Length: 242
Image 1 (spheres, rainbow, N blue to C red):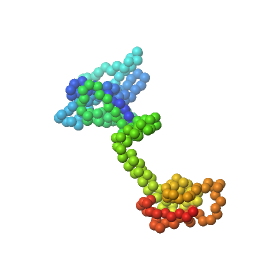
Image 2 (tube, rainbow, N blue to C red):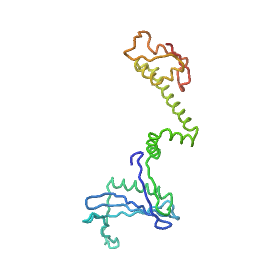
Image 3 (cartoon, helix red, strand yellow):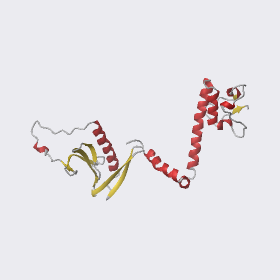
Image 4 (cartoon, rainbow, N blue to C red):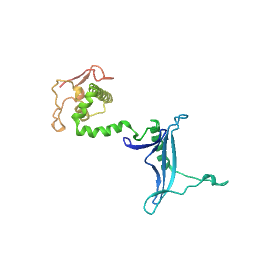
């Protein structure tokens, strides 16, 4: 599965200690034959980690398009020197591996009575976002009101954390290029336009486009004085002369 994708798994109990996976997994298929994986989840008190039983079946398609199990073969009828092989290529083996991983996760929940549905996901966080984002886009105010009721301060705190993280990254970029002296006037202007918080509150400043720039004096870097080089926090003071 790709990140954020999910797969539904349905089980049906057959006893208090066993349940079958309703949908078979197709390992490979052609126009006339296919191999499928049938799975059973069991409670195994003697070895709780061993709760999955599988059967791989070879099927043929009938003239009316139905899949039927091929004739069974009794292994007890094999003679000395004879063998039966059921080879799986790399793709088929990966499908088998992924299915077993999902079924062991289901088995860890124990056998549950009746019809039960489970969701197997590769990235739970991505799944939550994929389900939540359409809801946010459709009913943005309602969603945030609900989240605020559940965690009144959580959204505000996380928002402040993200702002702090973003500003710390900007300070690192500032220090790097200030020390390397590798940015020209246009690059610095773009940086400050994207990070206007650096210029402080209540200052009367304006950004001029390239076509508007008429000033031929010192560059923007010549007008920056750092009492202390910014090292770990954007909280240290920058003085600007305009």
